[in-house]
Amino acid sequence: MYSRRDFSKLALAGLPLSMALAEIDSKISGVQIGVQSYSFRDRSLDAAIQAMVQDGIGECELFSPHIEPPTPRPQRADGAPAPDPAARAAARTAAREELRKWRLNVPMDDIKAVRKEIRRRRNPALRH
Image (cartoon, rainbow, N blue to C red; front, side, top):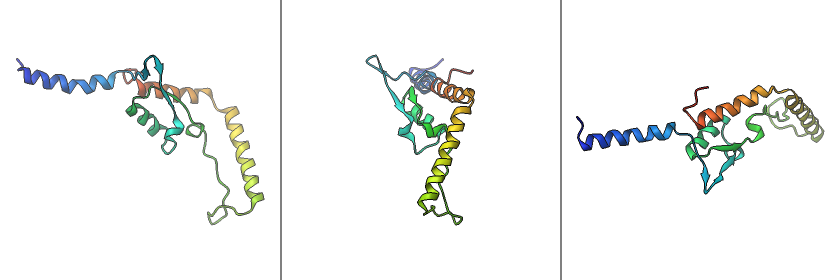
C-alpha cells in the first residue's frame, strides 16, 4: 500500500513521461503555429528537429540547405577564397548546375524519410 505522499511522488514522476509520449499540439486558439527551419540554420537537421520538439513546435517548413547537398565555395589550392571574379563566377555556375541536377534527380523517398522522421520525433508513440 502507498501513502498519499508516495502516490503523489509516483504520479509526478509519471507526468514527464506521459508528456513525452503525447503528440505535440502547437495550435493556439485554433491556429496552427509552426516554424521555418531557417530559424535553426546554425544546426544540423537532426539538431533542428530536436530543438523544435523541445520548443513544442509541431509543424515546420524546411529550409532547403537542411536537406540539399552543401554548396562548395571556390577556393585556391591553399584553402583561401578564390580572388579571381571570373573563377568565382564559374564556380557558382557549376555549383548551381550540380544543385539543379540534384533537385531533378533526388528520390522522393529521401524527402519522405525526412518527413517521417519529423513526424516520429513529434509523436514518439509512432513506431512505423
